[in-house]
Image (cartoon, rainbow, N blue to C red; front, side):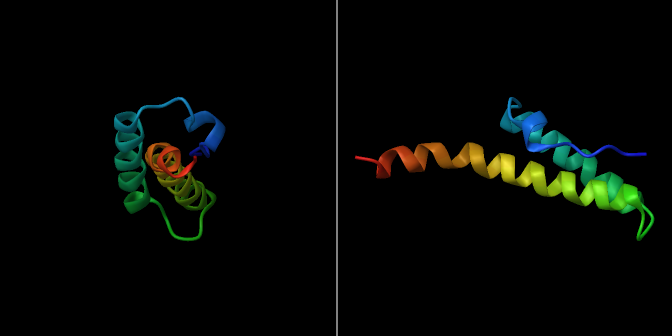
Length: 67
């Protein structure tokens, strides 16, 4: 069974590591059977990876807005 990666687990990873994980889980998604727990875990993990990537991109923009 494919495990779900949480935001907590992804927090300390670099953008490159997150990108590599995204690529790996995208490949796993293609191979996953429909309507299975593995597929749901892969989709949730991909969403978490995308959030983590977005979170890393935001702090620079946020710091410019705060006065």
